[in-house]
Image (tube, rainbow, N blue to C red):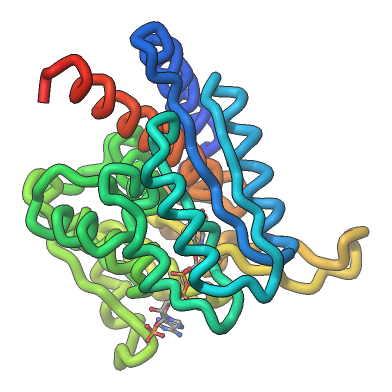
Length: 297
Ligand code: NDP
């Protein structure tokens, strides 16, 4: 039987509706959720991601403010924008759109975000807290994957999860979340130094591909009945399209359909979940502020 194709758009819509409800309730408590977005330069992909995030915030009844800094901006000016938003009571979350132009240290810039406003969950304090199982913001893309697994009723506890990729944005936090107490998967994290990738992926009850390599995972690398989550977003040439390209994941989708029990398509799988989880994190930041003000923390 072909795999069930997971509708990430439908799951994301539910989460966005939940975030919109939270925004309404928080506004009534005087804390309308607000995200500050810092964008440096004119990278077209970054511009389009920021636009999509700001549109989603508005649709959920949340506010956004942005600092658009020109290409060639100094690190000091980026840090100054972060400091301004750190100290702004109306701002609940701060997001720096990555990648930053060459010459700016992503590590130093992200570390400057106040942990209670770190809705991307990338700053060292958030990563440390999450690693120790303490309350923290969790990165949006892997959180979205966990939400998908919950939604489809995948058995995570006791499962063998294999994550292909170890970036700080996707692979590493993904492996951490799957293996955390409560999720309880047994996790293997693969990377470009992994010898015989297929030997690992073939053992995966849950396979998360986050390598950014089109076609890396072929059908013969998938354990029959596995849940396959394809995080990869890759442009491949397609002269039949007006744009000249199409988006594909890291998994040979057609082949995998015959092996997996469930699979996320690209686009329309993990992608829509990332923005939905960002809205959840912004609402969470505003809720924590409201509770602090009301003396509940
Ligand atoms: P990175 O390039 O930062 O990391 C890729 C990871 O994959 C690295 O750890 C790399 O290993 C590993 N890798 C690369 N080639 C291989 C290989 N042949 N075998 C095994 N491992 C390999 O990418 P990101 O983590 O930022 O993103 C991964 C993908 O997910 C991209 O396609 C990106 O576009 C997509 N993405 C999608 C999002 C969404 O919302 N759907 C959000 C974020 C990312 P090593 O560490 O050894 O170099």
